[in-house]
Length: 85
Image 1: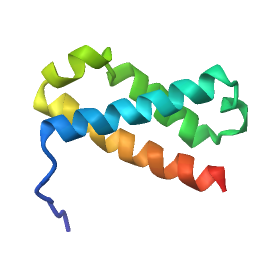
Image 2 (image 1 turned 180 degrees about the horizontal axis):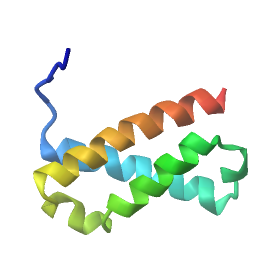
Image 3 (image 1 turned 90 degrees about the vertical axis):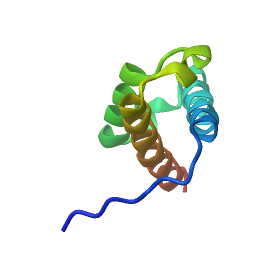
Image 4 (image 1 turned 45 degrees about the horizontal axis):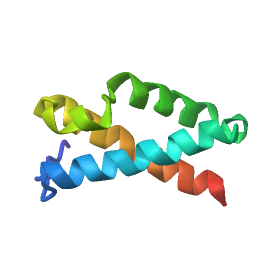
């Protein structure tokens, strides 16, 4: 059964959320803490960076691309929180 949830998050809130995740992942790379991450999380970071535009262009992304990026960001955040324990 497929369930479609209506998003109550505005595009501006989505962009802020994605920007926060991007800053967190950039920090992990700068500190070279990526070596302790699972392969799944590394794959999510790869997909995240393939879709992610510079922060000033995020608000101008197509709705479909923004939704994909938001979905990957949520999954990536969940994995990062789990692996930080």
